[in-house]
Length: 277
Image (tube, rainbow, N blue to C red):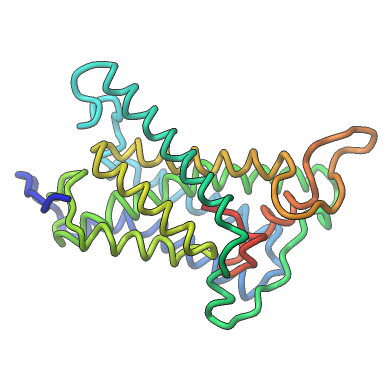
């Protein structure tokens, strides 16, 4: 681990806003969901659109994401680009294997805090069937694209650097102290119901941060994890099967367990039901 090194960059006042606001919007909607679970069927799509709109609105502020091909990790040859993004995909896959494999062996955050997990939302209650698929589509799109960009912009685009220097724009990617490394890992884990897997995944993403000085690589790793998890659940992964969910007259590997797991997007849900990284 290295100490942070300053660059000759002057950070404008309020530079943190574009990195924090999308996450703040996301957390505000999570609070609304926990207080009004019956409104989940439309709150989640609205949340996805709202966070995406914030990211798009601030897109010009994310200099680190403008041209990933010219980032520090990709300087030189196409070989470096291939290494960066191959490593990112590998880290994302390893992270989700840990996430899924560790799930049955420890209590979730809610139970540790003495709380009672709420009953998960079941999208099969949505009528007509087309709206069920629309909801699931928003769920997957939100996790794979919107959440991946939002979280990495916040955790590794902002927080890990801010902890090493309030003028965070002057802290280069890939240079951090043990303090910033460990704090972000712990906070990332506590953000999720599966806190232990979250800690391991946070450490893997931070390791990638230290190895490849490229914000897009971190987003790619996170998106890979969430996409792999979506595929696993869609193909019937998880504990128990509650019947198939498919259009009439068709067979499908999409289990109802998928709908329950991906339908439950409350902040503190049962760890066997909430599977968003």
